[in-house]
Image (cartoon, rainbow, N blue to C red; front, side, top):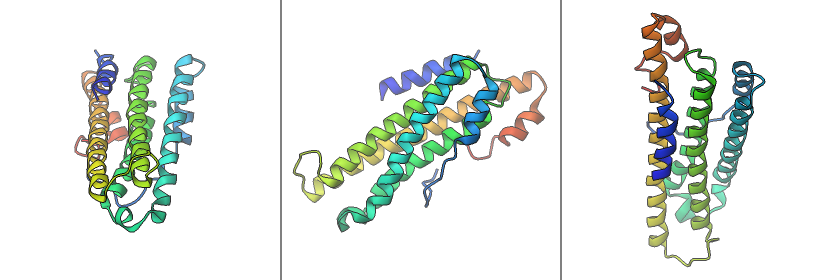
Length: 206
């Protein structure tokens, strides 16, 4: 967790919810096009797209596991924390794709700042994906450990708590990143355009 905070701190330093009941379907197509348009022809664009592709891969792996939960025995299948933990991978991805899609079309961010933000999102989703792997191993018993039902549920509780931290950290990271644009827009007396892009501070990420 410490290195995640360090990664996000580096990203933010470049600037001078409730769980859903369904799996969010992330569509990165427009984001890829926006990245290309925003920083076309630079290595920055390539790095951001690579980060996005790796993140979507993790998202899809989580989705596959989510769809396979029905095959798990009843004790685990009926455990809401298993479902909620997997759903939070979808939430993190949705914040990344939706929030960053707007940031790349925002002239208040430089290419280097966008690259740093992209790296922060990718790291958060990477850590979330690792938790999904841990969860799958615990639920299916593929980690080689023989656990009682209580021990298994205790580990699931721990994984759920960690994933909740990453989900909340992703929301905070998004809020702090977007707040930079609000500050810069206010200094330039250009708030109308930023409000049209992100909405008012009370909406979604605020």
